[in-house]
Length: 380
Image 1 (cartoon, helix red, strand yellow):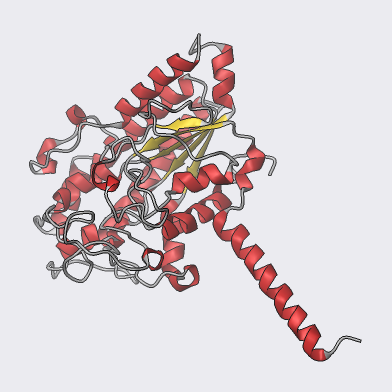
Image 2 (cartoon, one colour):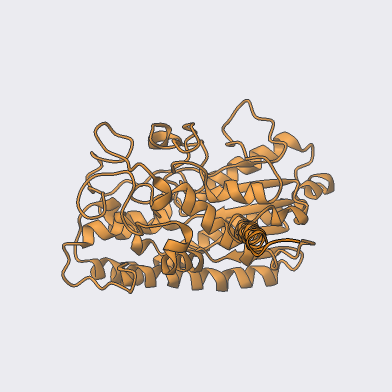
């Protein structure tokens, strides 16, 4: 006959196992997207998604230290797109510029520092002389078109479109269009609210969203039917924006000590984007265009950060200078000589001044997968 002690011990073990399983399912996605049957993923974006096309700063340690390899990912390890691929039961994607890759499971066309708008479309007076990179969504879609032509005899024919129909198209970008404009590339600028008002007057959001829709139309013309477009997270919580505004006595903060005006502006972008995606969906009834709410996902993590193993919500793990470990001069950035990195990136939301830690990417991806799975209309 079992003793009370043994029963209690077994109950404790079972409870612990159940907690682990439930936590794994809720946080990691546990291959929930595998039931969608995606044969490939095609990804577009900026440094939040780039896995090595524009390596630059992210090819030096401590970037990649958690996974033990510097791949060009702007994190200590994996990115959101990596967890999306794992959840779909696919191997990690290859950078589109990798000449040795076979691209059996798709390709990643994201370019670090890329903006949605092309240079000729950017309102230069708002950018205050900051020379943004020439890479854009248009360049990424052009590279995608070249890729399709290399793997299909008839890129617009039924056989090629069938390949595209079994693929997930992932797009997450737009933040750099606002970073370069509103934050002046991270340099200390004029009062914050003035730059927000300038952006509104110049109708920056409509221009950015218009460029996103144009890019999506190109992808749909090549047969994309499952399209996932992520909104922008509340970057008013990042060291990149908090540091320059720390000397601005008129700056307004929310309950998480994030810049309220900037986050409200990014929410405006997200609302505008969702409306535009709704119109695009009506124009393309054969496609399934899904919005992924990274703003909500990040706010969820901010509100319960200790539950996700996070202690530092606005302080960069890697960086130097002030309250947020960031000096906006481009001379003391993560990866440069003499710039320190914390011992445990998983306890931080931000690995550097703008980019998320692997732990944050994993947790955010898990929340996104829960959100998008019903919208993707998969069998899972």
